[in-house]
Image (cartoon, rainbow, N blue to C red):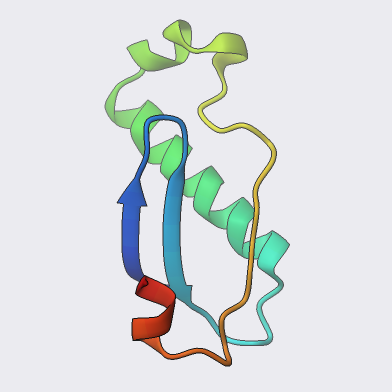
Length: 76
């Protein structure tokens, strides 16, 4: 999975990534959320105590594929 673009919103993020068709999107999201949470909690363990239930990410997510559109169309 290769990140192409990212936009950070107050309560969520938008990611444009390039990944192989063989990678299940649910697995890609699980890997992304797990690795970022682990890295952040190892660097800043005090954050876990400040979060509701000690979780960084909400379990929900939205995914849309954009394979038939150009990068410029997606950015618009």
